[in-house]
Image 1 (cartoon, rainbow, N blue to C red):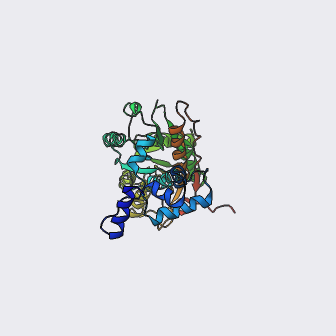
Image 2 (image 1 turned 90 degrees about the horizontal axis):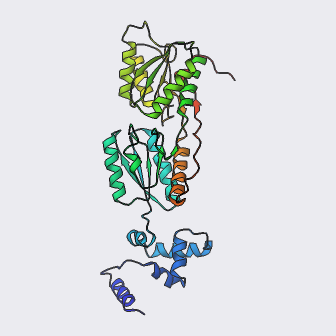
Image 3 (image 1 turned 120 degrees about the vertical axis):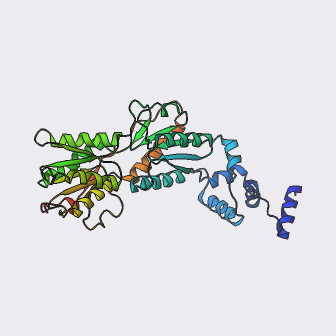
Length: 350
């Protein structure tokens, strides 16, 4: 027995100090090679199920913890992924983040989440901090208006939800032009003829949803676009502005940038004594949690947040392992209309 092992046993038996358990301690106990134990702990397919079970059981008994610093020195990787998102209060981003954590965890990675509050400056500072921590890859829903700052990033990068013009990067997101088309067509089918759009911030998602709205209206219907934002307060203020003329140009249908904007706009209508959907019908975007629990359940467009989170993680893992060869681009996700009471002015067909 080596002197270090004698010291370990002596100190542990007295209960004074417990030295960290090493991978080779588990290997010696089970009569395996350190390489086999390492592979078993990582779930490598070369190791049988029974051997993996024995290794995991012994590791739990000894309270074994992976030495992340040593692992990084050996592999050249930190097994960390940086996730940069603009708003944790929006359930869309929270649900995507949850799916990313699940997919990354299954691949042996941990996710470090950075919240920017829709600030381009904060976003750049947070990305620089994540790069200084040597993250292996970055997933970003960017608040930038141009690609200048992100173009210089050397760390493998995948964008989601928002594209940047001219940015040569992998992207995972929804077909937002189809979102706008689908929402507006639904309001037309419900008999609405004066359809307004409460548009979001000056980002690609908002621009594409506006294009879809205009596609649906065509030349037969006049457009009515009001600047809003991304939260309920902006939706409330925008709707109040629409109603301020005494009703002469009051819309009978409103397509909102997202669900929070729609909730704020509906509140403004209800305060004005209008009925939803009889006087004004509403459609939001995101299918956020509890939108079907509102006093008037909200019709919305589902962007399939879990699928976006899983796909963006797969794309990043591909980018990190593909070397010079870029992975194939991913088709845009197709949105889904979820019809509820806020837009139902006509009986639904069986």
